[in-house]
Amino acid sequence: MKELCDSSVFRWETLPPPSRWEGMEFYHRPSRRSYRMRQPPSGPADSLLWIECICEVHLLKKAHYLRRNAPFLSIEYVQQGSLLVRQRGKMYELEEGELFLMQPMIENEFLSGESGCRKISVMVKGKLLSSLLEESGLGNLDVLAYLERSHLERLFREISELADEPSVREPGRNSCLTFELFQALRIPPDIPEMPPVLAALCDILELHPEHDWKQPEMAQRCHCSPTHLVRLFHRHLHTTPRQYLLDVRMRRARRLLADENRSIKEIAAEAGYDNALNFSTCFRNRFGISPRDYRKQLSFFS
Image 1: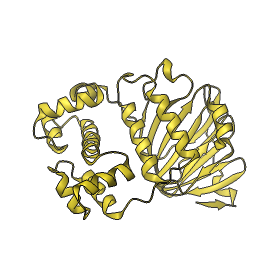
Image 2 (image 1 turned 180 degrees about the vertical axis):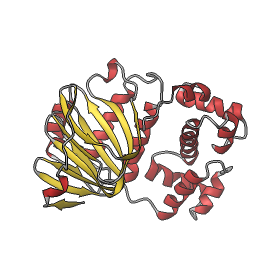
Image 3 (image 1 turned 60 degrees about the vertical axis):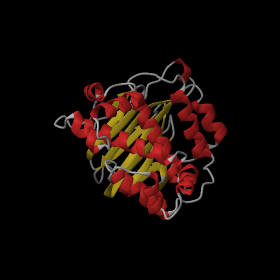
């Protein structure tokens, strides 16, 4: 992250007509490769603080957004590329792993960098939002850097998985994740950096979930015993190797289900299941809906 001095980078060549929504005014120059917005289910148990939506967007260079008087907090997390941001007269260039807190009811602005920007955006609303921002000190911050990425990205994955559920299965789950996200931003956990061998293992699991992974083989790749591998996963990823692999396979399956040309049997095989019925059972247990019905409910915006 670096602080910027030249405000001319935010100059609009031609200001587009304003758009208005829920009392908010915003200007938008869209330039993006992909955009996906989803709403995690919420219920009465989430009324004090909840996540209204999560967006995954890949901006091309010079995408520009300015808003005023938004009645919610937006948490903008940079995954790749760079994002130039302005708020309360201060300007910054954010890079991978850094975060912009777009505060409610004031003017905020961002602009994608020369290489574009891939980011996650989480919108937070609720009766406690104003008080929580004030009491936590987060309301005084514009940007955050030096965050523990594996912990934060785990939370974003859980929010994304919740958004894929068609209805409320766990009352209050949305609110619990929102509070946990606030706590992670307020007091980043003291977790050591992930060992390179574990990071490499996670990468190859993401690339090849279809492989018949066994715990001894995974441990061998990390040059440790299966018992120590479990400790590594608990310490750095807050889960077990088996559960992490299941999460990876379910994420792969959800992505593939967007392709209507692929059969459920093909998707099951590419997600690491040699039996389509077993895959469908696991998918239903995880999301409360069959793969076929999930495919019908998918909604992508681009």
